Length: 110
Length: 173
Image 1 (cartoon, rainbow over the protein chains, first blue to last red):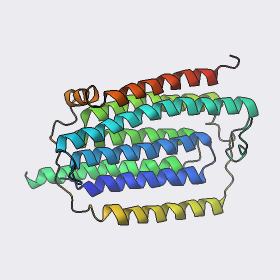
Image 2: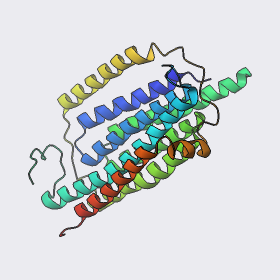
Image 3: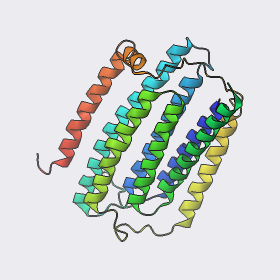
Image 4: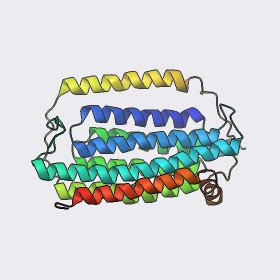
């Protein structure tokens, strides 16, 4: 079988790329994409732990497997709501200021 | 299990993981937002197939439908509305200090977490979950019995998200 560390390593790499992207990019849409990348890397880690399972020996195998998958479903729901609201906020800011550079948005008030 | 089967699985995983990692780099590295979005779509597809290799079929299908179907269409729609694809829209001037600090932080983060998490778990190879743990029957049974309360909370969250995005999109209430 593929070792667990393969999936975890890929998840870690994607998460690191997301963090780096949030730090170095200035386009808010791309920053949003990097946040999605981080959420997905965490999802991958959850599913990998669900499959390779009871490393911590809590509960039975099927219980921890289902817990991992359930949290992935809820993360997907939260990500969908977050993207809808966040892109709406970006559109509203663009309408208000005609600019979208993240470094110019240093004030909370419009 | 014959060794050729194992080799095939390793090769499949390597190919999918390689494409996923490359497209993750592409999301950050491309200057054009449309290219970043297309890289992200490729990444999500690879993730869906990785879920299939982990026997989580329902999650893989949900990944394709929700992420590449709904979320990425929303992204591309906003890019189209704001005309982010045009190269002169948002020039990111080369800021080498910021890039250097970011990449250094990423390398340190990767090294730290991999040394603390990947090394102790390097020997785990046996799967403990049953093979049908990702089947729709199992997910539905679990979602509507043990996790019915979080499920309801998620539905309320989605409702608030719908109302909030409509409020944001309207010019005058």
